[in-house]
Amino acid sequence: MVVVLFDLEGTLVQSMETDQKAVLEFRTKTREELVTLGIPRSALEGVTTSTLMRNKALEYVEEHFSEEEAKIFHREMDKFLKKYELYWADRSRIFSDTLPTLRRLRELGYKMGVITNTSRSILLSAVLFDLVGTLIEESSSVLNTADGYYENQVKAIHGSLEEDGISVDWSSFKNRYEQVRIRQKERSRQTLREYDMCERVSDTLSFFNCDVSSASNIIRRAVDAYMIPYIISLRIAQSAYDLLKTLYAEYKLGLVTNFAYPSGAYRILDRFVLRPFFKAIAISGEVGWKKPSQRIFEFAPSRISAKPEEAIFVGDDYEADIAGAKKTGMKTIFLRKESINSGKADATIESLIELPSAIKRITQWQLPLI
Image (cartoon, rainbow, N blue to C red; front, top):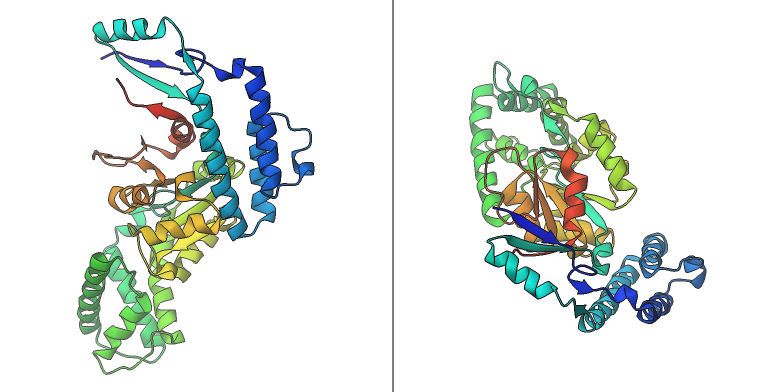
């Protein structure tokens, strides 16, 4: 199948940019609207095009506006842009040879589409990431141990408790721990409420008549010990750092991760020096809800004064990352590692190296093939 893709303005329809009077009017109205919404004229000094004015305004909003002020600004600018987009669209004129050409191409069996930039593309202001499986990876050489990776973690809990004077038969502890774990995870799967790792250990000990609060340092030390083998298993590629540095210069970056033990997630971020890249970090153990719940996806954009429709989410788990983010109105990029259907993801990539070009495609307005 051969596909023919067209630009819209200037190719299929006459561009309003040729109407200098309309262009100058739009620039004047844009400046007036920005000043009305609280942007000082000095911040726009020397800037002539409406696009650059809005970009300067967005920088000012990020630095000087409160979260509530930023929400009002984005909402009012969205209304303003919609009004002018409709105004310009109503006055666009199709070239005389456009329809005959399209009809002829369709008769010849070609598929056709339109790819065009719009003023609204600048409203994309944030890129949000999943953590494990997307930015960092587990190392199979560390996971494939003689006793099994998971069992080593539970042994670490048991050993830490023994060091704190709590002695329980290992085999009995392991079996009871597994029962509590399954019960917790099933309840979490049904409700999307994140479980509590410290409660898991405390509930396990209560079976052996050991009453230790989930908030105690003894329990926290045990869960910290559980995390060590997992943290050691993680790896990050230099290309991930390079990507984050590139995107950081252009977008506000955020992180949304399912991690039942927040302290462990922060230790991972600090180990790989990732925390400075992110203006918002949503960890399920802190938020109380896990992906694909809309609540955790709505949390991160709100922290960086971005609406969900102004954000792109990047993740490797289709159900948790892509389906969940789509429900909130975010654009999505699926990092596919297996041969599975990427469904309704806005873009699919096989490697993070492809991410910048995928973002560029998404920020263009694309009409369906006809």
